[in-house]
Length: 161
Image (cartoon, rainbow, N blue to C red; front, side, top):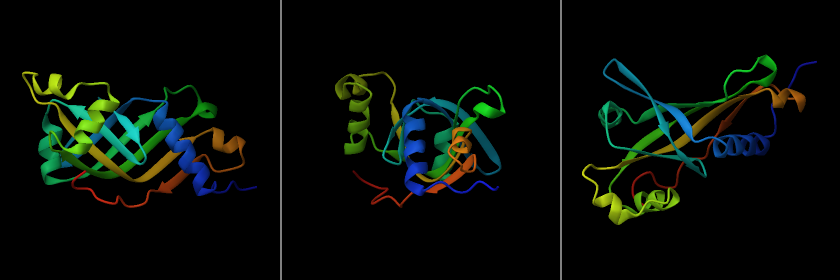
């Protein structure tokens, strides 16, 4: 018998749980024939990833191309224990002091005044996830395909708040 797609709400719940259980990803950016894969810590909230970074080539890429791919995965332990997530989305660099910048600092337990006093700028990248592909062996135990795809709803506003 052929496995089938899981109900969308089940897939979304598994994606949210997987992202909440991890905190490090590989952020892939690209522009003008160059691609960069950056291991970086993230926070996940309701379809959006928040990444705080001092800078680097990824920011130059994002100025030209806001499309990103993000990978989060468990260490490989065999075909019967697969767990990996690929996310596609659009990224933006949130201005220092913007409401979502301050909110993300708060989620990380960082004091905005202390951050502002640092000798370097901490930048916030917000990624709105558009599509997720979750490969998880547990789906097979539930009678579904191991690989499930979920399309996230569009963001209410990618610029501002």
